Length: 200
Image (cartoon, helix red, strand yellow):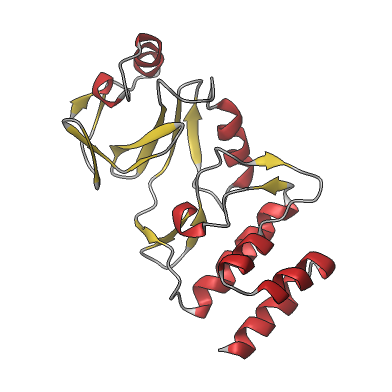
């Protein structure tokens, strides 16, 4: 276990450490594929680093140079995105505690079951009025769990919209522009999935 101050990146910020300690977060595990100085983390983005809190939970800690002043809006959108998104347990200005999804990043050679689940989850976000905005590169924002369940992560850029489009982003990534156009017109996910299955 490593003192929480060592996870404040890229430079130490007392206000971040203070909030974490006030919420009972004193130490975290140095664990994950990315090395940040003396410690390892699970992920790093433009607004935060993801570190292991315990066996089943991770924490996103706001970067001291983050373009956003708070993670609270992101946390609230992620809460309403559940169960498409990992479950949120607690959050503050500088942190979000959530489920640790053990798995791997999405790739282009996924089985049809994974692709269809991803499209349905993207549609579920649309039904909740959430546009993710980063699903044109879903390999960065989609985790396939060890049980082959699909989770859409990282709601940093997400927002509520009247007419959100997530499915079209994924269809474009899959190089299916005609299906993306068809979905945009008719918004029928079942038809799109049937057409994809017929291509197999």
